[in-house]
Length: 304
Image (tube, rainbow, N blue to C red):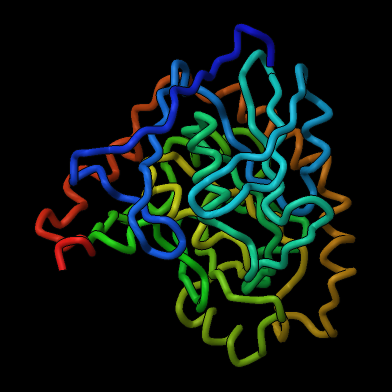
């Protein structure tokens, strides 16, 4: 970006007020608190996986940077302008799809976006269908999720008690914009598994009976972490295949990439159109997600 960058940072400084002492380093010990003073928080974030890496080439004033966070370094993030809107694109798997789903540093990824000044995130996820009516090649905008991950770091609040509300797990305003920006299935339940293996037939049957529509490996804890930092988050799920036992035949990763390849242009077009529609201000409740979420009497380690 040029000297008239949308985003400026103050120095990191120690937060003395106990209520704001939310984050710890990876060892759980106290450390200086990070606070970012953002002049213009209208940067839009794209958390991309398979199929959207090329969207950066559609922008102007492209810069690349790696962001330091209390949880480690982010992947290389590309910042650019699209429709004169500042955008930050992060390949969640890192360059070359290096990190498998269960090894992605989700906390560093979301924190880095927040640190850049992003307050609204469009995520893209490749998924398998649990419903014959939801076909490979379809796009689905989920309105709910079921979390079957196991070992991931899923919260920023390990040392204080914070219960964020997920009555609407995905930002309703951002969902409406995505739904209006392409030919999509406007609702469904996203089931997230640990990976990296695909699901067994028994697991798929369980997911179906629980109400799942699609199944993937990358949507969580991403959505919850964004909510914990009061960011808007919504997902475009590209259906790459039927989950095992839904349709006959062995599932291979080649099948997944083949379908995603054919839908890449449509996916990028949808994201670009959505960015053009996103307003500069936010009227949803995502920005107030921490209001009333903290248990005030939670005990800090230094009090023990």
